[in-house]
Image 1 (cartoon, rainbow, N blue to C red):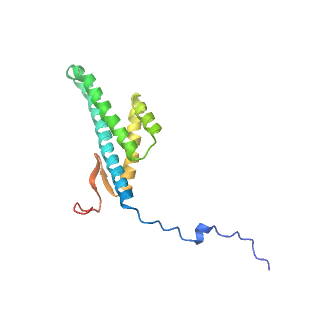
Image 2: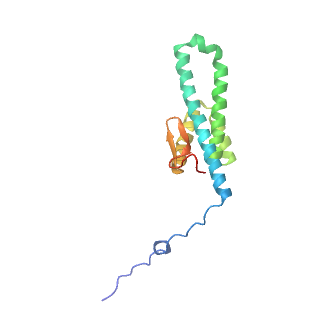
Length: 151
């Protein structure tokens, strides 16, 4: 009786994955810094989106009051969103070219809003994976499961 020709299993199926060496203190500090930048950038992006929406509503409801402050409001929203984009791109380890393209794209009306929403989604996923509790207005200051007294 002939044995069926069964291909051998790939090496990864039979060998356990390599054990990662423990991260150094410098690597842990770097990751914590990146996560803090991501959390701060996310809050700025969320606030920029909310202020942008509030400004649109305010210009429709109270045009006589908002119109004189329109340029100042737009500059504030642009500064907040650019700062948030730069912090988020840095925290998510985007390249400089990608960061510049995202920042420039934020000045295109609908594209800018989509960029802010996309970055917010990526930041939420990264922060949740790191153990942060992320709510409507961004991440809380301390990862879930870590007490404030611990480092």
